[in-house]
Length: 507
Ligand code: XMP
Image (cartoon, rainbow, N blue to C red; front, top):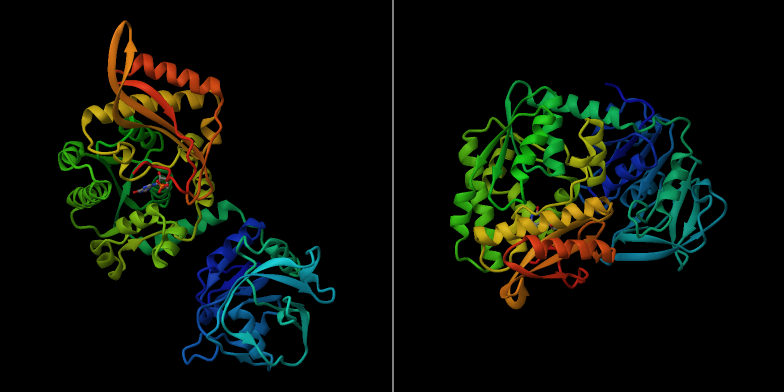
């Protein structure tokens, strides 16, 4: 389909390019990503953005764009970082290569009254990440903003071409969205972003790539893999969804996952490998060793049941793509990278057999897409749950008795959160086990039992987290029910540790 009045974003290789696309969508307009050599195949855009990139314009293999074709569209163009340097060269200026990197905040000093800066506060913080800088300015250029040292950081040519040295798409540029909105306001007409159109495009793209091949995907009941499976089903491809029950799931979770998929009319194959996982974990108490055992067993069980895959679909999201490329610090992403990039998968990828349709999206967009696919809110709003499951909520060795105790405590706590209207207000909550025995009294008898820790946090991206100030009544009822109903527990603790220094999970 030929695109119309959309925002065409050209990717010069910056790790923030997809973030530009996302910001445009957030501002309500349809954006599409292109490679620079696709300049002649972008339909009739309403505005064009040239992204940043890691290269220097003076490198032999520096990415370029056909300037005549770019001008030919007659629409506003915004060059970001590398994009601005490229525009400066096209307009007859030059760029000074440098090994010195400017990285971090700078104060924006607006010069004149360019519409790009309507409503932007003086000295607003913008985020820099570059080495090269513009040197000579070409003809017909206007400097519309400088940094605190008077160096030009924003240029305008002929009222239609704009350049900015900083990155408006990152949140550290405090008024980045205002600047982007101002830029998009220069377009005569822009196509609004509608999740329905987006869904349609994704489905068409999947059909085209898959044809009549069978696609295998793993499902966990979590948001990403569920949206992926439903999307594939909606695209009408021949899909085989496999759910591995590793025995480390929450109370009734395997049954709930099966029921949820049945509700959505997506058939899944359940592989009950709980005995294998528990046997593999027996007596192992080192957190990293436990994780490794679980990760390797998952791969073995999954691929044993898949056999020879014609195609594999994965629910990789954009942050996973970026983080796996840039050596993520978070445990979750490293583990995910590990699962999504094992040798078997890399081999399939080389053969063009890996499909990652969500790789352009962020978590909240996946939820939005899921809603457009008709997935119920209770499934979409499920708290995140780690791949290694309850094993990371049970410090030390894992066995069935301990897992069952966690399952009971957790079900009571989550039930209370839902009853009191707190489940959807927190990012993640759970009960875990502290396998340390302490003395208590139950009935008229001495008890010598373990403790459970309740954890409820709010977070934006799981990199940092704050504990939640839950109402005392909710905690009181939870504690009372656990102490009355769960044998093996005589103490309930509430975890009031922030991340950092603690992590969300205990292992
Ligand atoms: P931590 O414990 O590192 O957890 O603060 C941050 C977020 O990541 C989840 N988590 C995982 N997710 N595989 C996953 O898919 C994992 O191995 C894993 N470990 C932690 C955790 O539940 C929290 O949301």
